[in-house]
Length: 127
Image (cartoon, rainbow, N blue to C red; front, side):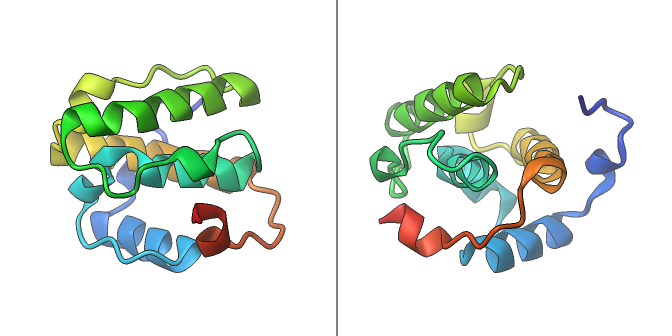
């Protein structure tokens, strides 16, 4: 488990965005753009291929009601993978910087601890 004082929560915004864009072939310019949940789904899919039904992820979701299905997919992926972490969907979909920064910091650490390092074609998994 990753506690609040873990080094994960001291990773900078620019480092997170750089990691996200290079690892998953994305072009995310702001942490708040992760609020639709699609990026979080992709990261868990990289750690546990097949745990997330990536074809159902809505990358174009903008409004809260459009984002909720992505978080349901994420929660299902957590359950399939044995990840016991509460996802505060109401906070995340609001698109607030701090909430999404903390989620991104946590999920990056999770990725670093669990990803098998096998080739993962992020673009192909999205479509």
